[in-house]
Length: 180
Image 1 (cartoon, rainbow, N blue to C red):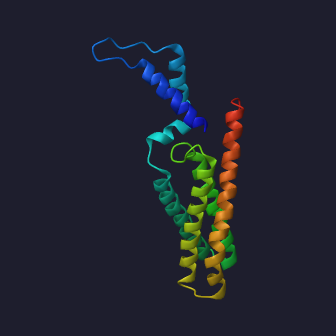
Image 2 (image 1 turned 60 degrees about the horizontal axis):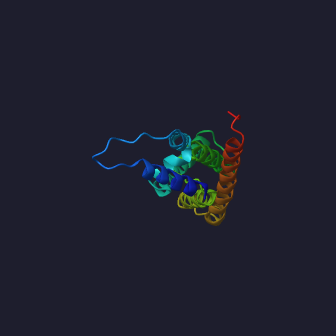
Image 3 (image 1 turned 90 degrees about the vertical axis):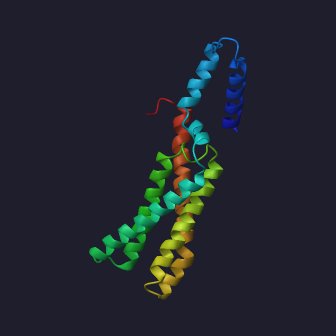
């Protein structure tokens, strides 16, 4: 809601500064200049000029699947039991998702926290389903079959927690600008 109001204010400022082609360019007032600089400093302003969050979701899903593959290979190399490999894979994907959500919080995701939660949940669900399928195909056992149901749900839960932490951290920084 705040970004919509900011966008409307920016459009009003731009409409006020527009002049005809024959006249000289109008000078931008100090208030309008401050509004423009504040909108440039706002990372959520950048989200309007980039692709939608679906491209970001596809990239993050691929990164999470790659993280699972890398951790699975480490588990095979160091002879980890399957349960330890599973737990490390889930935690590794949760940490990676948190880092990606935090780093790209304003460029590919909107300022709307609901969209961030929904995108994170879908990313984790798809990544969890693919990794569970990757576990089930080579070893069709009962626990890998149950992973087809549980791992996407675990991923959704961890993604919602990661999205909440990112939202809480960024909300705190916007309320208190003295925090580095």
